Image (cartoon, rainbow, N blue to C red; front, side):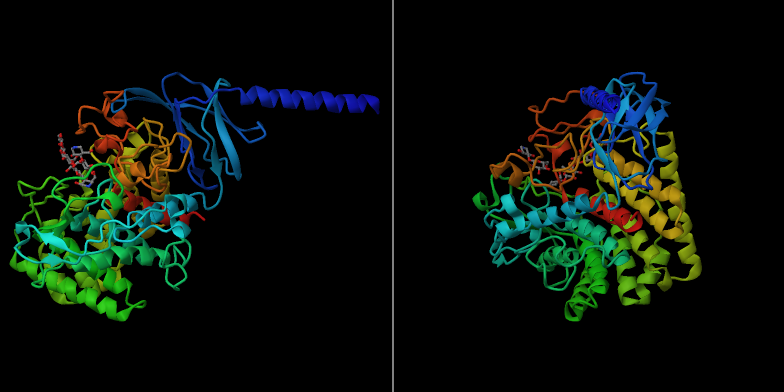
Length: 565
Ligand code: G3I
Ligand code: 9MR
C-alpha cells in the first residue's frame, strides 16, 4: 500500500516535471500557423522556416503528445526568401487547444480545433463596419470601450465643381468610413456591400437578429442586413436627380490622425462618373431583390434608382474619374467600364428580368479571370459572374453551363497555384491590399465548392484562411483583436485617436505590399515582397484597414461557418 502511494507520488512528480519542461519550450516566430485554429474536419497545415526541421508533435493543454508528424520540404519561396517546410496534421481532429512542438526544441503559438472556430472572428469582422459608421455616436452599450462621439454629420456637404454643381449643399449622412481615413467613396462602398450581400443571398440566416449587438438588434431582422442597410441608405443620397451618381464625399485633403468628432475640414461632394454610377446601379439592384421580403417599398425604390442609374450610364458611358487638382483624398479612379457595365447588367437582369440586360450580357462577354490588385476596380466583373451563378435558374442552360465551367476552371487554376506554392496559398504578387487578393481567391473557391460540393475547393479556401490568421511570411494574424502575434498599430484614425491601447477589433490589415508607397518614415525590415509589411501606424501602404479588405473576409468566414459546422 505504502509502495503504491510512493509510486503515485513519483509518477505525479514525473508528469509535473515533464509538463513544466514542455512549458519551458520557447515560442518560435519561425513556426507559422493559423493562430485561431481549425474545424475538426479541416485541412490542417503549418510551415517552418529558417531551419531544417525533421519532426513535429502536436501537444494538448496537458502537454501530452497527441499527434506526431514529419515535414515535407517545399523548397525556397522567392517571395519571402525562405526555405519552407510544411507540416500537416489534417487527420487529427479532436476538439481542444494545442501547440506544435518542432524537434522538441521550439513551439508554435496556441491554436484551437473546434466546431464554429471562426464564429467570433466572423462576427467581429462584420461588427467592424458598425465601428466605421459616420454621422452617429458609437454608444457604450454597443461599442463597449470603443464608444465615441458622433462625427461627420454630412448634412451640408459642399459641391465641388467636379460634381457638375456650383451651388447649394447636399444632405448625405450615414454610411461607413472607407478605411483609416474618413472619406466615403461610392465605388468601394458598392463592391464591399455587394460582397456581403452575396453571403446573405446564399445564407439569409447566417447572422441572426441581435447576434452583433448593434443599435438595430432586436428589430426582428438579421443584424447583417441592418448593417448593410446603413451603407445602402447613404449611397441613395449620392444619386443626382438625373440618375448619375457622385463619386465620393471627402475633404479636399486627408485629415490628421484625429477622432471623428475632432474632424475640422469641409466635406465635399466630388465627381460624378460612369464607374460610380454603374457600381451604385449594381449593388442597389442586388439589394432590391434581397430586401423584397423585408421591406417591399424600399426594395422597389432600390430597383427604380438602379434602373435610373443604368440609363444615365448608357448615355454617359465614358466619364472617367480622376482627382481634380485641388483634391488629394483617395481616388478610386477608373477609366475602363466594360466590367462595371457587366456587373450592373447582371444584377439588373436577375432582379428585374428585363431582357435588355440579358441581351447586354450576351453581347458583351467579359473574360472569366480574377485580375489581381485594386479589387475595387477589377473584382466587379467577378461580382457579376457570382450573382449569375447564384441565380442560374434565370439563365438559359448553355449560358449557365458556360459560366459554371469557366468558374471551375478559374478555381482549378487557383488550386494549382496553391499546390505549387510553398506556403499553400494562391498568391505570388503582393501589392496594396494584398490580403484582399488572397481573400478574394478564397471567395472564388467557396463559390466553386457551392457549385460542386467538392472538398478540394473548401480545403483551398481554408489554406488561404490559414494565411490570413498567421501562416504567412510575417507571422502576424491579420485580423485585429485576434491571434497571438497581433496587429496593434493599424493605419486607422479612430483606433489611433481613442486613447485605448488595442485597436478596434475585427479589421483586416492591408497586408504585404512590395511597392511600399508610404512616406520615408516607414522602414521595412525585409526586402522581400511577402514580408513587406510593417505593423506601424504610418504604414498606410501595408497596414491600413479598408472596407473592401474586410468584406471578402466576412464572405469567406461566413461561408466556412455555414459549411464546416
Ligand atoms: O499595380 C501597380 C504596380 O504595377 C506598380 O509597380 C506600382 C508602383 O508603385 O503601383 C501599383 O499600383 C498601385 C495600386 O495601388 C496597386 O498596388 C498604385 O501605385 C497605388 O497608388 C494604388 O493604391 C491605391 C491607394 O488607395 C492609393 O490611391 C489602392 O489601390 C487603394 O486600395 C487605396 O485605397 C485607399 C483610398 O484611396 C482611400 N481610403 C483608404 C484606401 C485604402 O488604402
Ligand atoms: O491616411 C491616408 C490613407 O487613408 C490613404 O490610403 C493614403 C493613400 O492615399 O494616404 C494616407 O494619407 C497620407 C497622405 O497620402 C500623405 N501624407 C500622410 C497621410 C497619412 O498620415
